[in-house]
Image 1 (cartoon, rainbow, N blue to C red):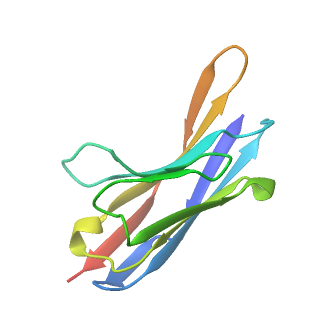
Image 2: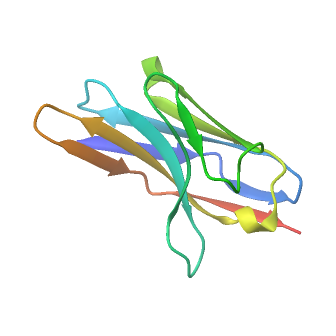
Length: 119
């Protein structure tokens, strides 16, 4: 059983910052890619940022230069530092862990943490 638990969401004013964390626990040997996705009301879930086990990162154009993803492999934890937040960043933020085994790949998701940015 693999569990992902996000934390760090909340209400912040435009221009502010938040740091999200996601801890992965359970029967896992190693996690390949980890990432953050978000979903605003009435919209599809979209990629925010991903990071490989080796540290290579990928960002959505809308967050480049404002958000930074990082991970601590020893703690099975991924972080998302968000700065210069705007109301358009308001959404539920979901952590993803992508695990590849010799047999198949698995994607695990957290329950999400709400980020609300007021104008």
